Image 1 (cartoon, rainbow, N blue to C red):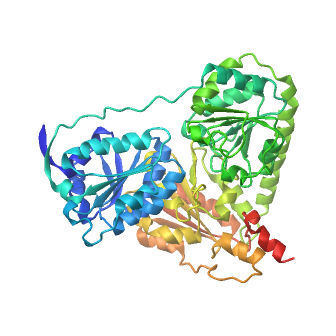
Image 2 (tube, rainbow, N blue to C red; image 1 turned 90 degrees about the horizontal axis):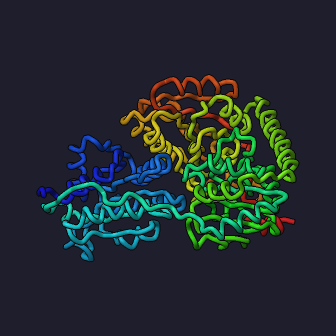
Length: 562
């Protein structure tokens, strides 16, 4: 037993949980934690410029590493309110972020104290669970519980409010390792495996839909083995185009309204669909059967039992882990020889090859101003195979999610389910810290980068050498497209005047590159890859290359204009 402050006990618990990176912004409510971190040589503290972006870093770190990402808001009140957007994003992505939030002294609650806000009520709306510590001696227990909850299926962010008087209190603490090392993922029962195998054996046009469960479970090898056995192409749910290596001959890319036409046509034509680790949610279907065969027999495998058949009727729902079920089905279907599906695959592969050739042809037209298709081709051609891409929201990034090469899972990190602008760059810094040996490229629009560009300072201070490609069209592209297409070109608030982001990067001490013509991008990318420091490439893309992704949501405007 040793006598330590509550803050030191929290840090000792982080060490017991084998935490090696902590993101945060210092503040007076959490000073005992930061003082203890000063002496914790096994934890690297990444001081950030804003708690929101610190949460995105922890989110990216968690998704890339498979471990919990930790963020500390050292100041109660405004420091904690800044966490909300980042935690909402992490919640939509089922990302295991542990937020430690400095809080008012216990005796000051409900007294209209300085920077007082009901953090418990605020944070519980955007987390898997939120606690407020009530006794200093329970701080280690509650910190361990935060990790247990964040990492238990289904994963998600948690928040622990830490009153400053408890952090300052001296307690006796017998620190030791965590007693919880994760729960075993559920397997499917034998009857469910047999039923699923029977449906798949009879399939004339089998299809696998791979979602976040495949990606986060790192089980692409098991899924590909099953796909090869079934002669089944594999489509991905939006935001998870990296669930499988893109070079595999059965890889079809993303399906649905945010996907490509070849993958989507597969989903429209398949007679049996094995949906692994996906809710078959909004971004996959827009809650309609426009992109999905309504007559298909769907086998849905999910670790969330409430997701089974919730949004789309299914022939069979299996409460189990996607990676385990893929292996179970491969064993059950051993020796299966679906000759009737050979032509199904051949037709798909022909159409897929034509699509890729069309994309390359469009991208090879090095027109100026730079078109998105040209930029995406140059990224496909110039990025190393190990590249991990982070994306923002907005039309340019939405197009990019199915246009790039995702060679080594995981390699795509998006805010798609929450649609958050300003996510990508900070997320990329967390991804790079989780996987320092890999190339990390963050794509952003100019508006989103303007929200979070102060984190260039964090990248420089901590030598986090990611590359940010700013697709600069001088506007909020999605909204400007809607104003053009559905509101008669009556633009308001759509244009964004920007500084030269390459020069801004240089002022921070990073490398900056400006690209105004297509032929300049390749050399700029190679220079950024070789520069040995954080880099920003400011790419001037065509401001008229706008696309209305959600045309369905403005159907009433289209009808009214007729």
